[in-house]
Amino acid sequence: MIGQLHAIVIDCPHPSELAGFYEKLLSLSRLEDTSEFVVLGTTAGTEIVAFQHVHGFRPPQWSVPEHPQQMHIDVMVADLDVAEPQVLALGATLLDGSDKPVGYRVYADPVGHPFCLVTPLE
Figure: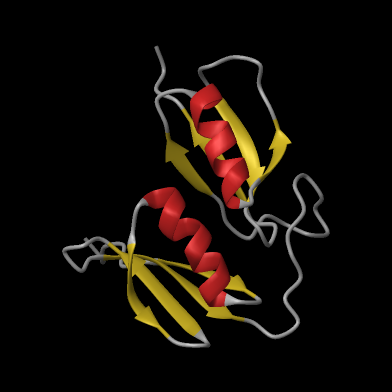
């Protein structure tokens, strides 16, 4: 083994605001919080995801190669129809939907990073 995942770092214009979105979406706690860098993790102190301030941030655009995704996160949910209104209420935007309650749907977080809600294969 070369190493193990420490955290995913996401570039953004306002780390505290974007961290607030993922804090609620993933039920994580703030482990570090400055104007330039916010770290979220478990209550046991394990770092999971961090947000760093980038001057001149250009948001990604779904399926546009000139504005690549930069990253995305898959979030496992039991039911897409139940989870969707909850993420929309947090400030997400639906990018690519599915009329089925299983599978996946693609969303953008409040600054444009895509993420997917996914369900277990049945």
